[in-house]
Length: 488
Image (cartoon, helix red, strand yellow):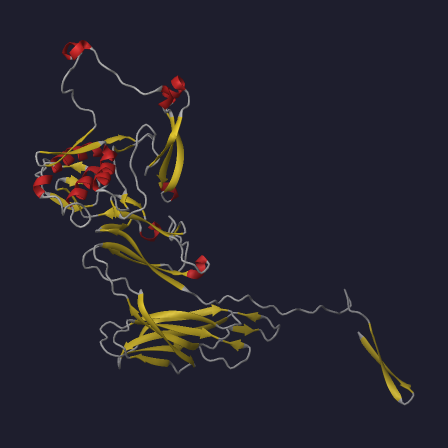
């Protein structure tokens, strides 16, 4: 409560003001500071990448975006929840005449526009270069905010607009229908990709049309303008016989850097397989007539045969059908042995041997073949003018030998020195529960340890799945020419 009293002092007057502080029960109040929302609209950078995963026709992603990993995290979780926003994938499987990945620029030319887009007066521009495949229109927001006239709070504002295209003289087709509800007090811009209309052979047009009425108050700032347009000539490379994936990602989610990518994929899907073989059920029907079908398989015997017979990525240019005529029958016999179900150590069963592995670098042919045949304990050899194969597995005795038919009547049993004996090793293996990253585990021969103690050897490096360690099963790592499944 304020009171004023005037008094004469000489030639002047003095106004005396007295007050009593308003407080609890005194009728006074407290002042309020206006609130400003945080800026939420930011300029976005989009990363577009093409990854080459393998040579030959591959089966592709095992489970869509759930099989695409960015920085080790799947794009979609197992329950379908998106872990990232705005991720777009284009996949080509390695066929000889596949389509190019769209949106991958080969050449770009940016042109300034700098025109505001008012309501009812769309901005229209023409593309006159027939080589241009698309344009990237950059929409600028000088400011986007609204102010509450009562309390002064500054809040987000909303603006809607459309970006359309047309063949010269035709009807406009909406490509992007956009509504922005954000806040910024500094200039921000967003880019929108518009591809050439289907069937356009000459000039074509694009336009930006504001849907939201223009603001008539200084308390609402939601102007938009076309900052620039970039003419894009796309790279129309189709990469025949190459499994490629195009990824488009908002770089803001990855601190404006290119994320690390990995993919869980089915490998080569055009392997030569017996015509009576079901590679998924791993069963054989009837007697094989020696003819083939094509399909996907993780049977190591048939992958071995394909490495020798395929001309595109194998040794088929150096081998004749006659030289492989016996090998296919050997592989058929060994392949059935690989597909037999055996205990998996966890109460179930699994095929005896599978391969989900790469040929990821150039190696001598004999080394590559030896690595593959080691999966099923095989041994290839040249005999009678062709390749043949055998494997180390239980068989019926071929001949009984005792002291009576051995020269001298005795056997020599060679061994190793005690100091060279190994009873424990460290194994490196690819863990499928951790995106096939390398992991390590100590493997002990307990019977030998009880007799000779712990004698640690080096560590064995391989592509292994976790299994009871008395048996090995070859699995996947990085992929170039891929058999079976794995990450790349």
